[in-house]
Amino acid sequence: MKRLLAVLLLLAGIARAEDVLHLYNWNNYISDATMARFERQCGCRVKQDFYSDNEEMLAKLDAGASGYDVLVPTGNAVETLIRKDALRLLVKSQLPHLASINPAYLNPWYDPSNRYSVPYATTITLIGFNVEKMRELQLPTDTWALIFEPRYLAKIKGRVTVLDSQRELMAAAMRYLGHSVQSTAPADWEQAKELIIRAKPYWAAFSNSTYIKDLAIGNIWVAHGYSNDMFRAAADARAAGRPFTIGFATPKEGAVLAVDNWVLHKSGRRPDLAYKLIDFMLDGANAADVSNLIGAGNPNAAALPHIRPEIAGNAALFPPLSELGDLEMLRDFGPQLRRQLSRMWTEIKVR
Image (cartoon, rainbow, N blue to C red; front, side):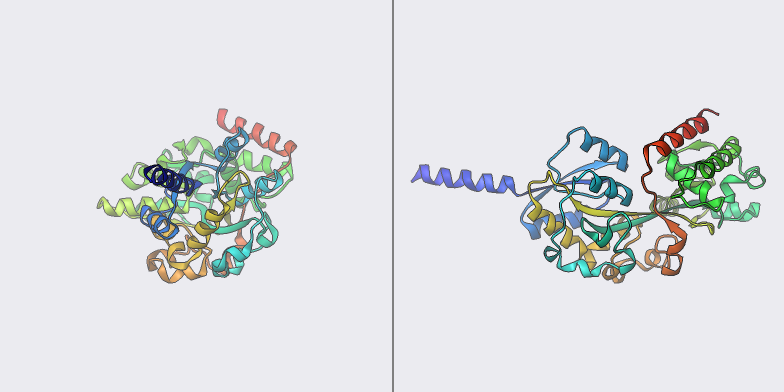
């Protein structure tokens, strides 16, 4: 009897050990409270690994990492993963809450008919700024000219940072020049390179993360960066009682929109748990979590009633549908243009 009980306990332990969902995610993209609710509902455990950009995630997978049930890649990375035949086709009958997604975010170029991906959260690459300083210096905050034109930069020299990202920075220059960020004409990108090189002497730094703190404490007055980061900088400045306000706005020339998505990786061993997580996060109250947590935009219409009004009502986080046409997503290019852009970026950094 004791032996039978031991065997049963062992089998129960093995079953419990197997009820683990492996999630490869951006950092701070699901709150601990929401994850705990899912684990209780699912009767499983979620093991998360984190990445800081799509390139890191793709490189890790290319190097042989496996066993991830769910990934959260941006659109262009979804396209790459589909091309590599790395994703499972969605069984949409397993996602009853899929109807919550705003139709404007369905059927994207990177995954027609959403055969592999479910939209989760959005960000816009835009301009953050010290409201009082911009007003004092009479500088415009609705145009990329603020970070590219010497007539404005002369007033804020050494107080500006831009993203240390070839695609993002050059995309901002392309939009300012009136070009699409998806242009494949090398001459357009050459113009963007020259615009950046002209502006570079006025910038304090290329920064992908420190600009959040630097804006919030007043070390810099203007930053090129992500909408959710600007939301955090504004919140940090308020919480610290700073004598200034951090604002952020989408330039009138247009900007880059990123849509992060749930996808199922083929190497995952628990697609059943993956579907449970995705559908749980499609429920409006749960989908609102990422917006309330970090100020991310949200493609889930059912989430809006659960998002704090000051977030849902901010056009820089939740652009009106009429403005979506001014936003473009980054996409992968062919090898030749990628090499050309890499050479341009090297020239930008060394000059």
